Length: 118
Image (cartoon, rainbow, N blue to C red; front, top):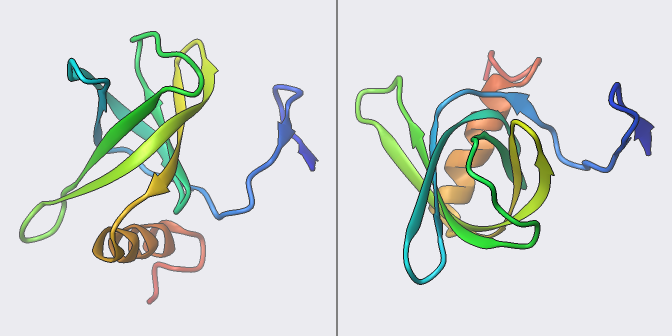
């Protein structure tokens, strides 16, 4: 485990890249919609900057907008709030289809230090 600047241990095993885009979290049967923007992204999760208070362990449907291409793409997956900080929440993905996984993997690779030259 690596020590981070905030003194908390770093538990990530997947490459995380800085990536800002629009994110929506759909929570519960009453469809509470939390809108925010991502700060970083990996194949296993996303940090969403939001002021909406969510509880750790809350399950949600995650919608991530990918723009900057001919046709914008929207990724959908199921997630769970894994971490809460004053400026947002870390959401861990636990279910997505193969097409979403492929798009997500490509976004992470393209935005990584050595992936821009794919």
